[in-house]
Length: 283
Ligand code: PAF
Image 1: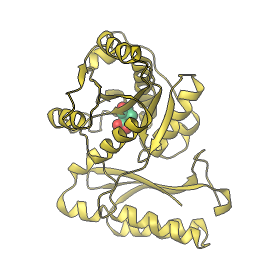
Image 2: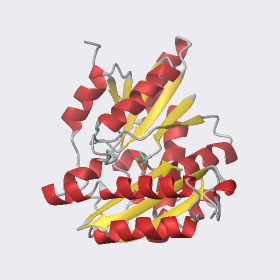
Image 3: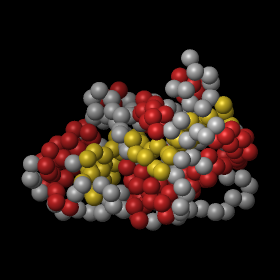
Image 4: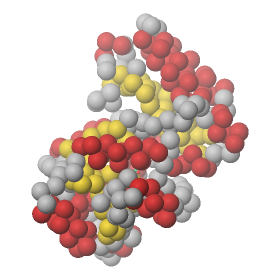
């Protein structure tokens, strides 16, 4: 069993820990998380271990990316189980600041991302979200100074936003996307899946089935508009309140009209009861 990771709770202790790793000429990967770790996070850590010699995982439920009406208070917090998982994966350092360490009294500076952050997907329904994500990820990058950072493709627009930000601000971090890990029935793993009732959990697989159906239709030559209409119908018939079901350019997230505009990505967000789920696949 590998030793437990060192747990840093203040910026100076994190810096000391990272400096120590650097002294040994290590390359450092950061895996930013909000905890409530599942197999999807474990796969991010494993990719980090393959790409770098040392791994830092941050666990911070970031208040600035939640609207007052959202689930910041209820967001699952499973510290002991998280640390056990990270220890089993041989993670070197866990960065676990509290809100006051991340946003000290008087904090007054935010990153306001544009480009992919204004693609008209998540930003239409969670206008506060990418400002909060960009600000905290910018801070995580400057706090940890990793060589690479691993983000899940499940939050596809987020991956595009942080990739753009790292490049635009010369943060010196290579952002790497990691494939979405799915349950056996196709549901994308997410910390918020614990909110689903048993019936909702069964229905939730419709999102993946609808995306696969639409992707197949587009690949077979059906017009994007009609493939999207079919996917929308499947999701609404299952009882979801749909925010969006859309096909976009996979790199720029710009709207597309034909398979030739590709590479394409289907992205979906929908609410089942009070749980909001997002997912995406390549066409
Ligand atoms: O994807 C997440 O868990 C969060 O948005 C992140 C990247 C850790 C920032 O708080």
